Image 1 (tube, helix red, strand yellow):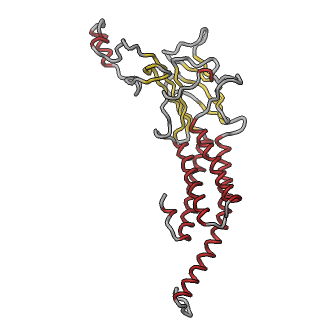
Image 2 (spheres, rainbow, N blue to C red):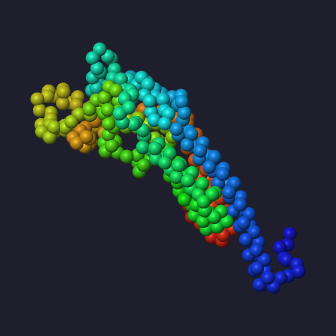
Length: 308
C-alpha cells in the first residue's frame, strides 16, 4: 500500500494536517485513559480487600518442619489474631503445669496492635494510588496530556513500590533486633528472652522465633582457651566438632538495651493465598499502567514511557 498523499500537499499544509491528526489521536487517547483509570481503581480496590480480608479472615498454618518447636495456626484479618500457637524450645521453659508455651494476642483494649509493617505500608501505598486515580478522573484536567502523563508516572511508582513491599527483600525488611514487639501484645506476656519477627517474602508470611541469652562482659563468647578451661579432652573435642545450630550463632545483637546472642532460631513460612493474589493483581496493574504511559508518550512525541 502506498503512503503517498494525492493530490500532493504543500509542506506547510502537510505539517498542519499531521498536527491536526496527532491532536485528534491525543484527544481520543486521553478520553480512553479515563476508562483505564476506572479499571485501575477497581483493581486497586480488589487488592485492598485482599490485604484486609473481612471475617472470618484468612487462616494460615504456622508449623515448623522436622520439629515440634512451633505448632499452630493464625487467622489474618485487618490485624492478626493468634489461635493456639504453641512453642516448644529447650531454652524456653513452659509455664507451670504446661508442656509448651502458648502464644496468643491479648484481647485487652489497651494492648498494642500487632501488624506487619510491610502489610501496613502496602495498604498505605494502595490508598495513595487510589487518591491519584480520583484526582486524575475528577479533580485535574483530563484533557491536559502533561498532567495525565505525570499522574500515570506517580501511579506507576506507587503500584511498583506496593508490589515490591509484598515481594520483600533485605532493603525492605528491617532488622529484627531494632524493632522488638511490645511484650504486652500477647497474653500471657511475651517472655523477655523470646524475639518474634514477622515479615513478608514473595507474598508469604515468614515468622522467625529466636530465644536469646544476655552476654556477660566477663563471659567468653567463643571457644578460646579461657572458655575451654576445666573441660576434659573429650569434652573439648566434642565442642570443637559441633556445628552451629543456625546462621546467627556467632553474632552479637543489641536487643532491648542489652547485648544478646541467639540460642535457638526457627523459621516458619506460611503461604497466604490472599497476599499471592494481591501481588499478582499489582503486577498486572503495573503492566497496564506502563503500557498506558508508553502509548501516551508516543503520541506526545517523547519517550517517557520507555524510561522505566
